[in-house]
Length: 217
Image 1: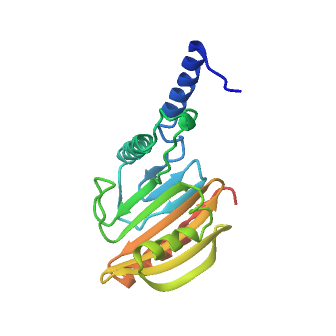
Image 2 (image 1 turned 135 degrees about the vertical axis):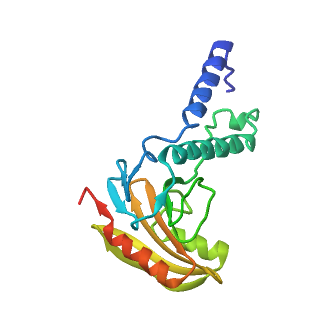
């Protein structure tokens, strides 16, 4: 039997949907609310600290947080735009944008924006686990499928501060080398994306992973 909503019920349903959409319009704090002091980054949400090479500069935390907010809102608006909310089957649809959150972007030179991609650099991101990104080895698989890089080091498990990571090394192009470390942390995958324009600088960055400390271990 078809159930017809009266006007108050329609308004209530619309209000619930509206509140749900606006609630999703901001990153689920405090996921990306890390802090960089001197050359040390700390994430209070994921309970780890990581030391940058001395003399390196990190993107200012307030700029990073604002960019994360904007990236999320833009993705959410795009997702909503692709859904026909007037269609009966979509009336109860709650749209969520799934985007990675930059926890840290740092480089040997000053970084003014998350769009900057100087080399060498360190990018730490957190992404919600989903179908194509559920396990620690999935970020490397996606890079292989999408970018078709030269694999310099096959994926292997490594343990850092009591946490299992999957490490894979790539040569992305002639002068771009990448070492990807990824680990599962609850509902999230944390990725350490280390890049350089030569293998020596990349090896130095890989050594900084030994400074990684999780406070739950």
